[in-house]
Image (cartoon, rainbow, N blue to C red; front, side):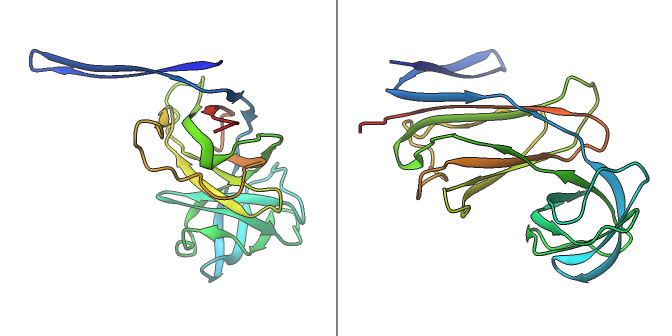
Length: 209
């Protein structure tokens, strides 16, 4: 059966404390898609908490009708529906997450990539770890992922800090945010306007608990 090794340590003040725990289960998975960078712009109109218009810089690839995530310093709104794009003017509506900031705020509009066939049953998870990383030095932008069931309902959503591994040691007693309907897919985006990111997601679960 597949095994993941979870290691944590703290050192300093003349003390070293460590924990090294193997996790074994009969089901596992790993994905590592590339997540493309977003496009810089300005929130030129704020109609309400999730409706407005972004003026994008020239050369963007955002098109009418697609779903995007919108980032700004300190927040992200995800699963946003793009209206009719007119050159660099992008109206939008129906996002969820943080309320939009004030008009004139600098934003990044990012396409969402879909990760299919995940087969994660959150109720049976033993361990899940996720990380978004850049090969380009000095990038500090966050990313976002939302996990959905077969009917496209959100089961869980996470803000991902750059180059930081987020570990959910559920077998070890950590609160499980992935319970509910089985997760069949996820949508991830990258808040950087300049650099593509790499998403790494690995998990263990008991398929016959």
